[in-house]
Length: 500
Image (cartoon, rainbow, N blue to C red; front, side, top):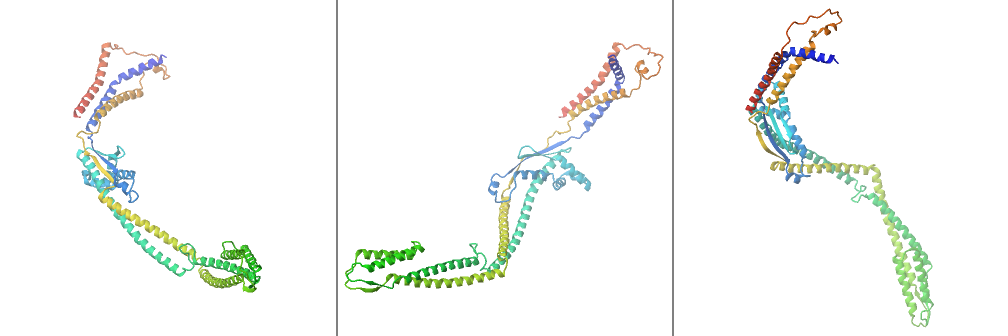
């Protein structure tokens, strides 16, 4: 426990002995620092504010018709374009910065330095500030003014160049597609002319399929007609050509025989056909007629006679009509079969005919789709070009023109001066601490014996101990040296504040 106070006392005494080295280091550093701060060049900042927004009327009207870009794209374009190398070179050429660029290396360094010192900051979503610092107040103003002018010029010129290049490209592509489309149309028309009989029509079914369907239909109709003819032949064989009438009869046996024959024929027809079939309907009317004549009675007859059977006559007539129908169906079936065989021969001679036609149509449809899309894009480009001439899609308004305050914005000499004083005091303390670390002297006999050597004794310095007045005087001188630094700092700060 006794070693700590002794250690503190020892280092305190050593530090007090070397206090003037610390004071000297603090003074030297403060003087050098304050002179350095005073010689720093003033920095003047020129700034401007601009407002950028999409046109509130034109852009919604052209959406989906003309080519446009989003607001974020335009804002990103602004920030990248302002600090692009070509734009920075134009700014250097328009200002006095070109006087410092005698070689290509100087120009490269100037472009890099200018790109790092021009600041583009977004204050809000649509308001941007452009700032530049330079020791030359007029040069700072000229650089910001050149930045704004370069953006306006480049934006208008680039938009016009882009429109012209895009329009020329579209015209070239449309002309190329017109040639390809014309050739595709000719090849498609020639192919269809050669194989029109076996190619699908507007309904998607080709004539070969239609011929096959027609052959099948006619064959079925012919089978039905032959079946009907056979039925008529059986009925005709069982029907008498004539019937006999009896004398003094009021509806005797002969009319009833005709009625029974007609009803039997009706039942046979109903077994084959429906009630809506024309022959069935005709036979029903015949049966009803016979029933009415039988029910109403007949005039008295005094002698029998032979008359033609109306049912037999009807069956004979139907048989003739059915035979004519069979012959007509045979002729139609032969013609349809011949047409089907002809179309099948054509189709077999050209394998993959429909596939080739589908390929031609697909190529034509692709060319047509691309051609129509290019036409729509060209029309949109024309509308966009007209809109570009009459109104801008992106509105740029200069809120605050370039302005340079009369007072410099940098360096902050007040803060730097205070920082120099603190650094000087820290340097003084550091010098004293370093000297204490490097000190190899012995403070008392205990330190000497700590070396492991025998110590016979110690001789004290025969001097009068310092009085209290002497100690106060030394402390006052040391405090005055430190306080003078603070006084000098106050004068420096007063000087700077008066200038501000």
